[in-house]
Image 1 (cartoon, rainbow, N blue to C red):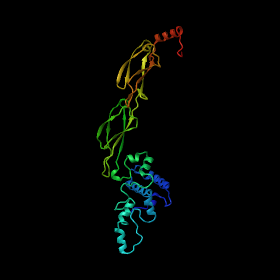
Image 2: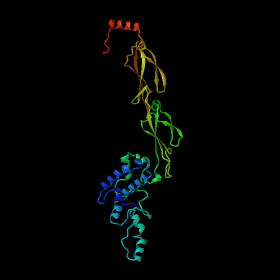
Image 3: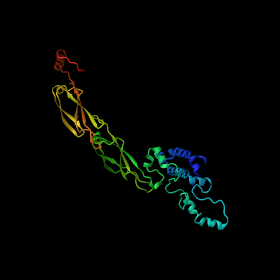
Image 4: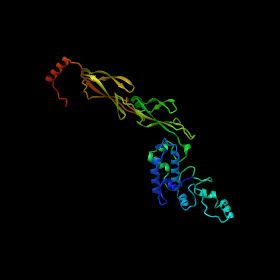
Length: 322
């Protein structure tokens, strides 16, 4: 038996539209199936709450209920009879028949709330309230007013990919809820945390409807060499004092493998060399690789180098700030 919609929402008959919405929002936060994943009756209670909100959200149905013309299931309430003939005429007449009363308030001949669960009144759709509360997640996981068979069991899978795979695009292996493994294409430069949807690869629908989707949330593994700066990638490369003074070549790691880079003579420790097109790819644009040279002294004692430095400091001093 359907309960009184006012009782379900915990309000009285004097409640306005704003009060009804407020009560529904408050109860939806606690009764939503997402908040009660281990409660087998959570779906039933939430469906009852949504039906009660839909019922009172329709001004015609609410008015008829308040006047005692229909019950909480939408069935007409007959208060008296003018005899058997009058009763028969009331039930079968075209203008005042039972079916026409049901249809006037949006019910089918079988009674009860409408199949769609959506209100014809001026109030707010309950799915909009749920999306507002859960940021769209409730509707995305299938908990709507459409009925249990339409609810899908979407599953979010976290996957961590190497920096290079994220920056240039590639594939990563994912294990689905059914134990099957698939190779998923990772779009180059995808926003971290953004999901890749695999249709029909989520959890099974316990009510016999279509299977949910697998939502692959991409995270980027930290890398000790590369740092993202917008679409550019920065890498630090150590160089010897000799190569910095005389010029030379150094091996530089890139997202596509190592390359040999020529170092100009008289290179300072703050100099950055740019390799065009070696950065992050995103939406058709490609960044660069920024190579910062780090001059490194020998880790062993070198008397000859120290003597040379002393002679230069005394005979050819310079101001590095100019």
